[in-house]
Image (cartoon, rainbow, N blue to C red):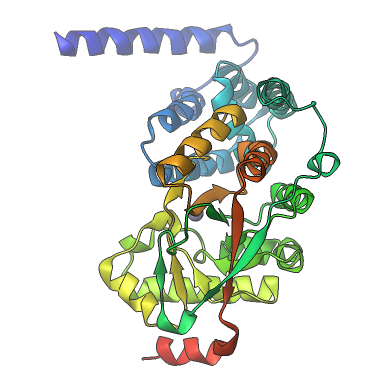
Length: 370
Ligand SMILES: [Zn+2]
């Protein structure tokens, strides 16, 4: 019975693929091309089923690889791919624009970007009603400020932080996966409005691509740590390969930011026991988190604010909170989140390296060459 349903379904799918191909004027596609057109849409549907950030990241990477082939495609094929994209859910279109930023243009790129922009704008209008804020009014006018305290990290002890033992009312904002060519700067502007400070964990290759943004983050008074060379899942690598990846990534973030702190976070928080041990032997702090916002998954900024509030409560109103500056919804939600933190009387925590224990790069080299 199951087999019958599957074969009927695939027959319907096949018919719909064929009829779609036939309806295209002046264009005939090979079977391979039709497969290609539909693979894009299936990729976006797969994002919906991703259970964690890791799986989601892998789907996005595989979609990006598909987009690389776009250059070789002719216009009619691109148009057909666009027609499929029009049927995507708005949340999927948000991801789509994120991927399109770095890849070949599609004829529908501008149109989809517009739809996504107006979606975010409508959610912001809704949010301002919901939270009782005058739409477009900045934090500066309302004079919201978040107190910030420095937290000196004893890096030579190779600490591993989940909530860093922070007390109730103390929150450390951490921002991963950047720098991003536009969103990081927007986030810096928002932080400045609230006089908020955060710890950024940057990906080596991205920092190397956008060194001026990496430097800007540091010069704005935030702390900068590293987040591997290329955001690969280090747990799947050997101890040696993982260590090479960590050191290379850290070096690139240091060159770009001109002042990385000896802070590191494993991509996806994914590490083996041995790798965790290896990092603890470096003069370096290893950061995890105890408050996950799922900001890669929750595309609606209003829902993201609500979810974040709930997670902070669940964590006992204290600890290390995880955001990603590569996500549009994170930038959109941040003013509301900071406003809530300010109104509820939270104090922000900024991680700094213990001043007496300055680390120089030869420490890494000696460990590395063991
Ligand atoms: Zn990450």
